[in-house]
Length: 212
Image (cartoon, rainbow, N blue to C red; front, side):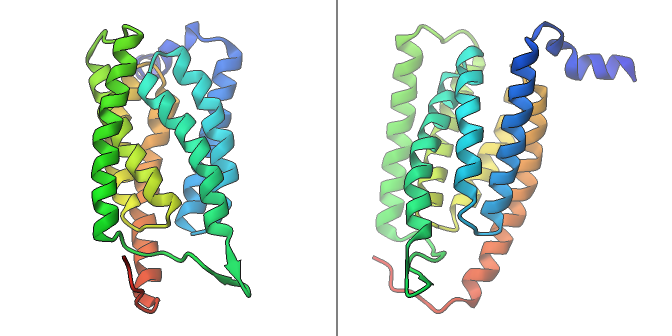
């Protein structure tokens, strides 16, 4: 058992205790946020904001600039999403779960391309093209940018972006020495699968909406 433990967690021997504690706290609130997203409740945002604030610090320290930008973007979009999800008229939710319209698909494609170009520029500017993780990080950043944008608008397709991005992130974080965060993304993937199924059931029971 010890060799396995050393393989999985040996890199933590050189970590500052405060960073390990922060990672654990960030993971806890990250899991709570995804769980609340599955439940379609606005608590996804305050819990997510705590997690993202912590990971901005950790990811900057580990030179994962793309994911650091993602978390900063998450924080800003969480403010918008919190407002958007909370809006009600006569106790009726104004913005329920919907599917992505053709116009929104075009916007998502543009956001994906713009995200890749932006993160590429950031890595170039800071001379961080050191290994393959930079390329993977750039790609996952674009995936998560689109996913977060769709989630803030309560679009069911955002779960599909989470699932793909989470799966790619599992080996990425493990390679970078954040084993606990890698495990977190395994759980994220499972919750995202169930989240999609849960939202699909809600959507199927909802009356049809006219989308632009």
